[in-house]
Image 1 (cartoon, rainbow, N blue to C red):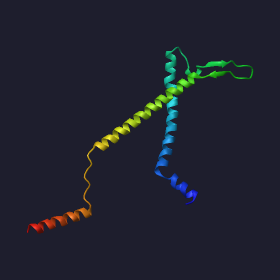
Image 2 (image 1 turned 60 degrees about the vertical axis):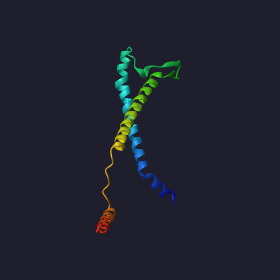
Image 3 (image 1 turned 45 degrees about the horizontal axis):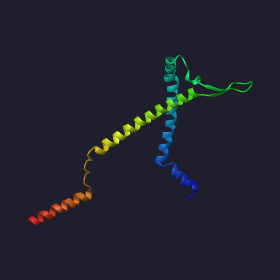
Image 4 (image 1 turned 90 degrees about the horizontal axis):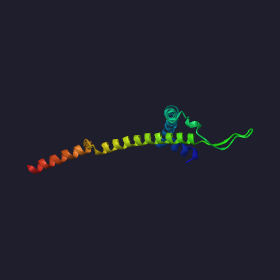
Length: 136
């Protein structure tokens, strides 16, 4: 089997396609959460603690000199990233929780008996005919 045909077989498997879709949706979801945190959550929190913009919270390690920029520790951005992560983690947790509950409900539901196959029907008829012959 050539490398190209092996790759084609690998790439068109359902799991790979599902994973790619999940990664794309996850990246888009991450951008939405980042915007939600930066634009909707952090401004009111900053207002509550005295009008502070979290993106501006820094510790200057070395002041700017001439053409060189200041060296800063951007802990406000870090706090914002932690909040992004917590929201994404909570959303994923809730999604997995719902999926697990649906799986448990599905497993707990009694399985409907399968309709007998044609072979099983014929065997049942033969059995019934043999019983009827024995009773005579």
